[in-house]
Image (cartoon, rainbow, N blue to C red):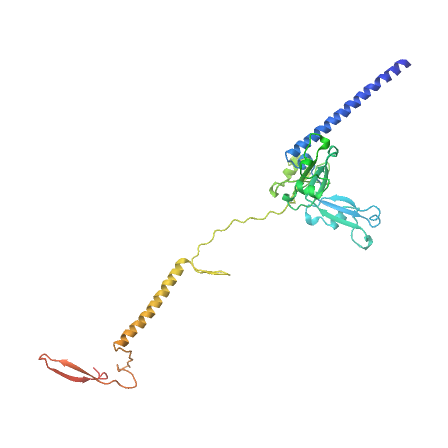
Length: 342
């Protein structure tokens, strides 16, 4: 019996070794497939959120207590606030117990809040088999959250170039993903409410940041329906405010003289009528002067008569003689004064 047990034990050792070798080979294949999938995603330009690297915070707190700043230094904590204005030192102190509040009793403490809306998921050659690491910064707009910006902001993110090109060898690969986050999902399922889970993703616009989109992006966000009564799913757009575009109003046709702050505008037909009026006025004045000149040359003059029909003036004019002709060719005359009554 002792011999049989010893023989069985001796035969069991190679079996355990073969199982261990199979397990190691299987894990190596799984790691290789995961890295190849990440390389394929990188070649197709997907974001970190699409490969499961979405973030769950938007505010980083660097804190240390007065008695620990010198020895331990500041430690990093993360919170979810929902907007740049709410990521403050006070918010860190209110939500993180390790972040002391302001006051003389906490003199020497450090509390620094930093908001971010861009997440960089990166790994350099020789480290990608350990997974991607996340780094965050405040880009302020989707156009500034790029792989190039990640490479310039963090030394752990490889820059563009042939020296960092993707390789068939997973250990020699370089990866960098840039994910802009403009939608905050605050969710909890029935068995975990009211404790909320915060998740962020790139919705691409305010209209696409909806509870339905949150439910499709994250398992922690329940979908709509009676089977999910008592759950919470709230979507908050955190991206840049879209400028309101107003439709251009058609310019009104001028109906008269329009007085503005800078200039006075007159329609074309108004200018034409004004020109005709001025030309007529000048012509009338010139005609009156010509008519008076012709009258003066012919001996006409302007006189004024009183109520009795007599010409008024300082000196009476000399009487004129009017000669009347008779039928026999003779003539006789008499003096006619302009002052005689008829």
